[in-house]
Length: 206
Image (cartoon, rainbow, N blue to C red):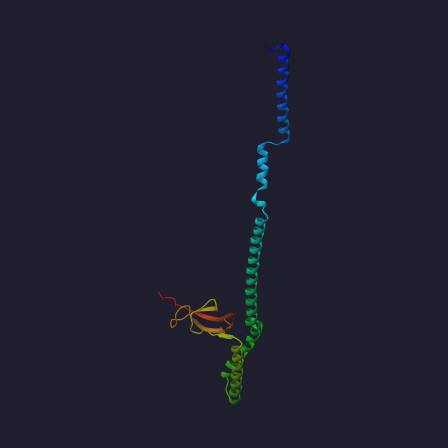
């Protein structure tokens, strides 16, 4: 049979064990050393995003894309430059042609005037002017100039400029009846439209 003193001693020892266990649990909670926290730290350390090889491969893909874009831009620039140089070679004399055309027009008008005169001297002058006109037109043709003289052709608003509409039963409507001033192209590009008179159907008499 236990003595009262022994029972009291056992009670005190059990209370000390309980209180010591509570203190240890409290310390662990304050330090954050639970199992879940340790597992989270290990997972962060093992994250694949921090792998140097993965980072290096990502950088390689990024720089490869930048290089491809730069190469494509350079090719586009080369094509644009080549096109600009080609146009400069083709149309560099466009202003010269525009300034020379009135000279051709004046020669043509002079030839028409001499055709209406008479006399041997007039015939000689007219022949000389015709040769001069032919030489100038041939020179322009060698430089890629094409004279637009659309008499009898259908009216084309892209190349012709209508000055008036004339009724004419002998020609199809919307055809070029006469050319007031010839047009001009340089290497296929229109420099000056031809000024023309365009036919239209006669009005019906009721």
